[in-house]
Image 1 (cartoon, chains in turn blue, brown):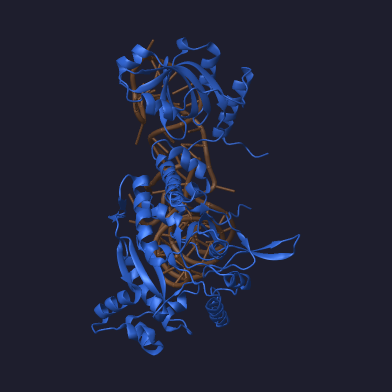
Image 2 (spheres, helix red, strand yellow):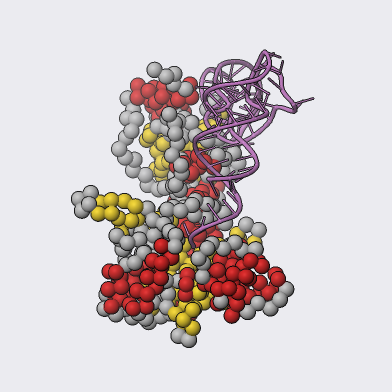
Length: 501
RNA sequence: GGGCCGCUAGCUCAACUGGCAGAGCAGCAGACUCUUAAUCUGCGGGUUCACGGUUCGAUUCCGUGGCGGCUCACCA
């Protein structure tokens, strides 16, 4: 039998001593009259005399984060996860049993406290305890009170510890919740219906990415975790749902980085009789409103800079932006015509030092050159619009320019935040695009879009003209909370399995 | 997957050029009637990520592996 660590043994001994007093170690309930947070917000600013005059009695509970003992005067800091309050404990103010329990408490234990509110000599808002109830044991020592939990790996793997000792972490996830609520408010107010579409799909479509594969036993069916909900949401447009949105997880079997987690949360919304230009305006409105509701303003601190979500955002056409920057870098006039021709596009990429994969067409080259020249520098919210058709198999072409689709991406903080387009609703053209993607796949592009016959068939029933957009929620929360890793805004990010053998 | 960096007590961190592995917090014992990173006295606490190598001697140098961070590539 392995030797139990002394710190654990001491805690266990304290717990057993409490049991010896006849106290239930894991009671079923505690009827609090107020949460700690409510006490602090409702009474925390009241003056000493006011509290003495009214003598407010309360019952509250939480986890013990600090104990300071002075012989007969003892102070305990209690947290309900949201706020903290000090409790004043003295032997002559409570039943003997309650004080015996107090003497056996460890940091991290849960207790209930009854008493009245007052201010100490040092003017600290405090509960003067007249009773103490044991609620649950913490058998493991917590991280240090002052430095907190610095080990970033433990913060991700044991998020509960991070939440106990790092108030800022709690704030981030509160902001995440407000972000989702603000988005739902915005869309609901515009007549959008929130829907849920399959997470397990027979064809992993709607985006260009590698999927996770799974299997349904009873149906003996191969299924993919979805990489996007897009094709199902557009089936709903066919079905007459004119405004729909979904906020849910996507799964992509690709690399992990500060901006990528294998499962991530995406907002997708679709609006019939709309188009990408209208969605740009709507996106500005939505993000400025969300920023106000989450952070209190439209200017948001992000690292060294301040992001402005005040409309309008900067707008750049993709080819125009590439030409402008390429012209500046190589010192001669670069034209859009060069980008549309395979030979000159390849030559230009070479001059700019952009490495190409074999088989890339002028559209892919243009998109790659754009990302290389521009992406990291797009810190303020910026729309990039009018993409090459070659990289946009689900978008509608411009009426006068079949090489270009009505599509934009929104960049902020140096990464892509949203992707939107006028939806391709011509089934014959959609089939041609899918077939084009199949050729890419045969050329070795594992991320090319799969053929989805069922989706093409749905389009044959007629889909109204529409605009649709996807917004990376995790990345948006990063920007709104000044977080620089996606793992800081996901409660339980994917971590490599530990090999403890 | 590549490159760079890290892993020492429950937590936060030291340990010079290879020479007895330390401090603060937390813990234990004690003092203390208003503290708030409480203070004071005393005490206990280590597979230095793992395995191997070099060496009289390895936390330290070398190799392999594990996990993590940053970054590049892919991607949103």
